[in-house]
Image (cartoon, rainbow, N blue to C red; front, side, top):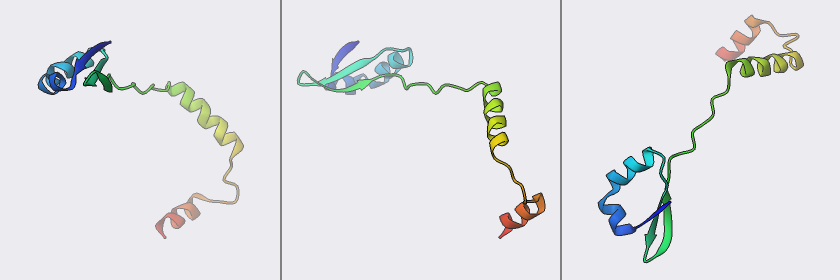
Length: 79
């Protein structure tokens, strides 16, 4: 991880952002004291569709809509 001063970071921010996009981490210091870290965001994991379907099926097995009809739910949603 590279360390860079705040003034230089301000001056060269677009170049630093390009480096961060490529995966680098850069520490920004002010008078030698670290104050910030530029790093790529943590990417969100995508869940496999088959895992989502399995979870929905488990949920559906435990929760039923007994006593409710589709028509009743539609009418409830209109209120």
